[in-house]
Image (cartoon, rainbow, N blue to C red; front, top):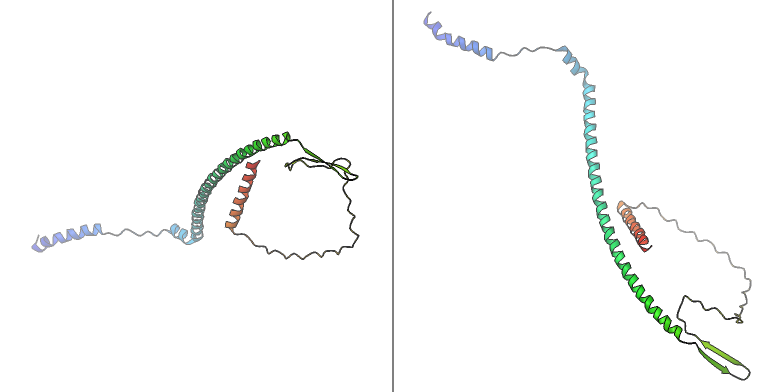
Amino acid sequence: MDNTSLLTRGGEIYSRKKGKKQRLEEIVFDKEKRKEYLTGFHKRKVERRKHAQVQLEQQKREERLALRKSLREQRKRELAERLAFSKELNSSLENDEESSQQEDSSSKSDSEEESSMEPKTTEYDEDDKHVTVEIVEDDDDEEIAYPKEGFVTPRISPPPDVPLRPHKPKNAAKKKFRYESKFERTQDRRKEKIRRLKKKIRR
């Protein structure tokens, strides 16, 4: 072995090892995969659409859940407001009942006092006439004073028959139709509910 071969032997070994490490993989041409890629544009498009639809449905579902949650919270708040309002109404109604009972008791005592009082009678004598007047105090609006027997109400002569001019119906100006905003509709609904609650409580 000569000196040059000895000195260059290491380089040969290194080049062999380097060649093994850096050897490129063989590129294999697959006809099936090529065909699938070239003919699969529609298929991939459909898959993308399906994926987008799934995501959209999921987003809508989340929005519905959030809306339900907000509606639930709003109903809870409205219920709490109604309860507070009904408690106020009940307390005011109880106060009114107590005051009306006190008024009834006072009016009963007044009526007892009035019934104990006897009617005042006075007699008037003039030339040919003798008149007896009986005075009775009555403050009750409920009792209607009917005329005594023998008393005749004077008749008023009916008005003469005069032809009345027919009234011309006024042309009512057409009211312009206007849609209410969402806020106005909710306000109207709330007012209507409060009115119904008041009616129920009064019954």
